[in-house]
Image 1 (tube, one colour):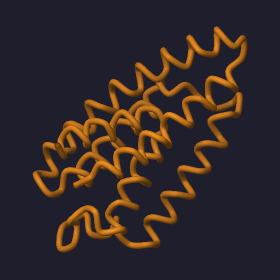
Image 2 (cartoon, helix red, strand yellow; image 1 turned 90 degrees about the horizontal axis):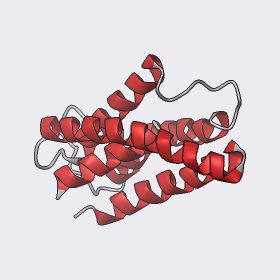
Image 3 (tube, one colour; image 1 turned 120 degrees about the vertical axis):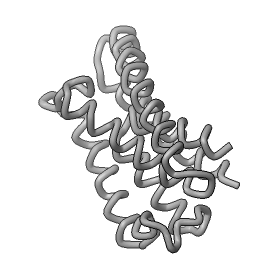
Image 4 (tube, helix red, strand yellow; image 1 turned 45 degrees about the vertical axis):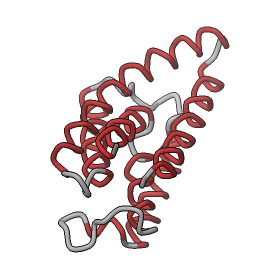
Length: 152
């Protein structure tokens, strides 16, 4: 189950790169993930949770700017893969962080490409990008919350 959730948090990273680590951090901070005594223990601190939440919030704003590059350019794409791998490792810490990292990275790859395609179709249907971006925001945030809620 945790590997599946690691994959799903990777998809969230593909949609919004900072939403996934923010969700993973809050899950760890709330004691839902056994990170204490591991190399990922820092993610459970309230400082980490709040910094990642601030970064995720800033990403929601900057995503709306016309100057924001495509998620498919190498730097943006790579950041999403790293975010998915890291978040997947945190989610799967109880069963194997390495497998969780791989699942999260694969999820991020799929989430990045599928998210870009879905947003493009929605933007075309709406005749503009803003409504499509806002729908993607809701899916990313709602998905992240649902994944945390499904943690054992």
